[in-house]
Image 1 (tube, rainbow, N blue to C red):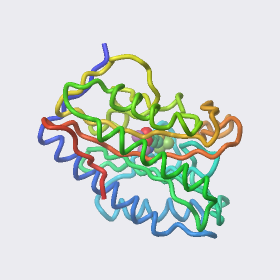
Image 2: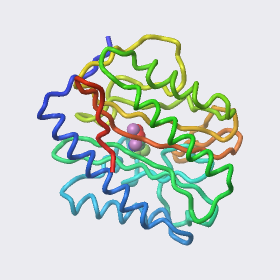
Image 3: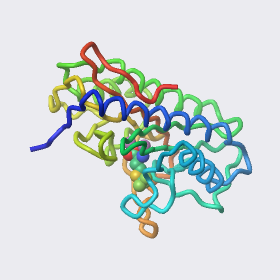
Image 4: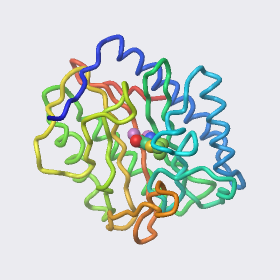
Amino acid sequence: MKHIIIKSPAQVEGIRRSSKLATETLNFVASLIKPGVSTLTLNDAAHQFIIDHHAIPAPLGYNGFPKSICTSINNVVCHGIPSATDILKKGDIINIDITTILDSFYGDTSATYPVGNVPEKTKKLLNRTKQALDLAIAALAPNKYLNRCIGQTIEEYLTPFNYGIVRMLGGHGVGVDFHEEPFVFHYNTHQDDVLLKPGMIFTVEPMVNSSPDYNVTIDKKDGWTVRTNDGALSCQFEHTVLITPNGHEILTKL
Ligand code: MF3
Ligand code: CO
Ligand code: CO
């Protein structure tokens, strides 16, 4: 039986603080994005920022992950490993994913940014993926089913655009641990699985490919980097959200 933690008020407050720091870190790293910058430079700046705020970057050493943030460029879907040889260039898109541990509580957020000017169809991919996330979160409230709010909303909104909604990875409960129950599907599973209750905290983090192919492959050498199978661009935005008695609260909002 799957166990979804209902967070206590004290846990909610701790996760709220960690989520705020994750958001501030993401915002800070975003300000450093420009052509010529390496993803290692972004990693090191994020690492220092998190440490300076008396927190720990959750990815570092997590199941052997070697760096402090994930940096995923163009056809990399997620879990890109920062490197001195990955240099941002004009026209790229990059997802920065930040997870902080503050006083043992986790906050998790990510966003995808253009590097300099990008083609109109790339701007549309970014805007629509963000819109899909926002619409899904807007539907969240107690006594509703998770899939109806998230998977169904995202799939119905994105269907006209012929994108691929990644299935292999999803959102997750978060807060006391990095990855908790439930698994959050971003496509319509047509199943009334999780009935939402106040005190549940989880991420919503759709990964959307610019082609209809939702299949992805993990790099065999590094064991982490997830890429689109057909080389298409992939885009992702992530928030940590709390179910409240009246609806929801985005804990990673700027
Ligand atoms: N932050 C990612 C998520 O949203 C997980 C990264 S796991 C890591 O779930 F090990 F790559 F950091
Ligand atoms: Co996450
Ligand atoms: Co994340």
